[in-house]
Length: 464
Ligand code: BES
Ligand code: ZN
Image (cartoon, rainbow, N blue to C red; front, side, top):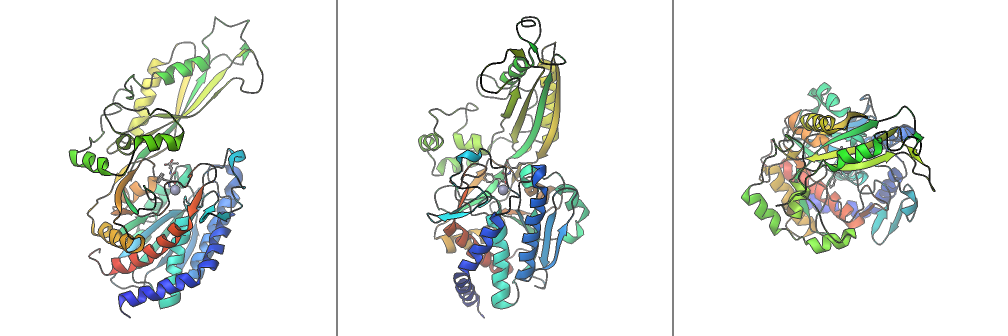
């Protein structure tokens, strides 16, 4: 069958199976697979079992719920395409926590379809892509009885909590993961429904600061004015982490930052983006950040340091007059090439311990880290992806970076030595990590059709 005819048959199959496919997608969204919360570890396993079951039903082989020491990886493959390339496909079946629950219009694990979208935690990030990949394989198998390329699937269960066990699992399974290319599906579009290919991700370093003062909370009248207050000490340390120009005031922090090239800056400046719309979308009346860089440059290509959570003392209703015994903060840095999470942690730890005032004990713990990644815009597999996106979505894709992180994407490059294509279809207004997360159903269907075409186009390409 000539290529275009095969695609027509596949498209017709996808049209016909739409309702059943949606039902399946809804079903996986009902499982609260929140990887960071221990009370949901059984749900993570249930989600893994669901994904494995669907992979088997699609006709994939060697389907396995592989133990990693944490939430399992679902592995599956189909390797009968002879000397066609072998692609390692990645997605994650775990999701972020749902708080603040009160802001959800409907419960986060009770999916609803409205305004051409499906609303649920994980609807976009990343169960959409997991289901798309399984359904794309299923469509090929059901209509043709085979796939045009060799595929290995890795569906992770710990992406949202830092992928702590994945690098070791990749190392241990190096042989069974041999491939020509990794396709990581956990990103999305940038502007409305214009397709986009992501070519850069930031890395991350996540840590906790613990400050300890007196052995127990003490009366702030009896003891006030004589003791260093841990909350004040923590505030002092945190306030000193940035200078007045928005730069991170930690010695060595910028040492390994690769400067943006003139061309990279020019390309970013050409993208459809307005500070005013960005502010309106966020409900803020001013932007802030490192001087000398545009908003997109700061989001995608400059490192950051943020406080993600901070707590100490009495936070209930009313008043309680104490000096708290302890204060804590969760902080994280987004990293850019060629920053290394371990090195950044040590630089921040050394800085914080040096500036911490006497009278309190300060401790820093590294919680997780992941390296940044830049992919090559002119790799043949990226060119082929661009053609497929244009065929399905009707526009030439934009080339964007993301400020977020997918630690395993850098590991595919650094641990397995694979070129990486970041191919994802979520809309920019999908509320990832926030209340009322949603996925546009036309992006879902378009993404599925893009993947279906991509496998065939890659088989015919120079990628080997
Ligand atoms: N899907 C996101 C990564 C992403 C974010 C892609 C924004 C495109 C736009 C991913 O699931 C994610 O959120 N990763 C975490 C990783 C962290 C917990 C190690 C992140 O970036 O916070
Ligand atoms: Zn994700």
